[in-house]
Length: 157
Image (cartoon, rainbow, N blue to C red; front, side, top):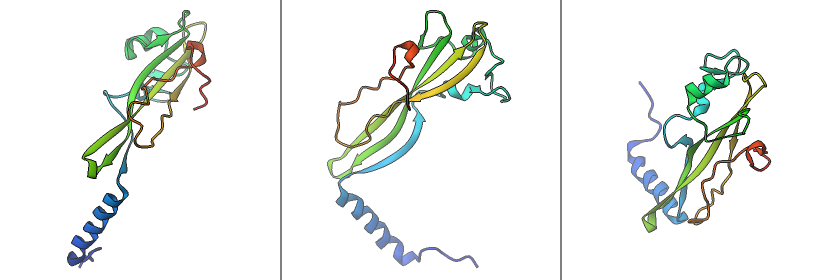
């Protein structure tokens, strides 16, 4: 016979204690683990040389990347660096007593670097780090980070 983790008579009091504790705190954060906002991110199609992904380091040309991923959000004048951006949802703040919910967005950038022959040599993902603190309405502009070659700050993220 299977054992129950919680006796049925204790389920209601435990539920009320948890809900009451959340309400006393005023607000709580629900993480969404950087889920993409508008479809699958381009990084899902990029991998190392031995991966089965369609875009691979050392094997994929710039023209193939443009065919697979489409036009980039930004690129250098010589075409050796391409940047693809996407939005993520980092989490949601909930204020149950105020009947209010606030999303915490984020942005990511896939940076692809090519050699003189136009073959993919490396890739990296840059992530912004907006604050997760609540009650900062309108203080964050969701701008994707850019690498130094495209006029961005030093990407130490």
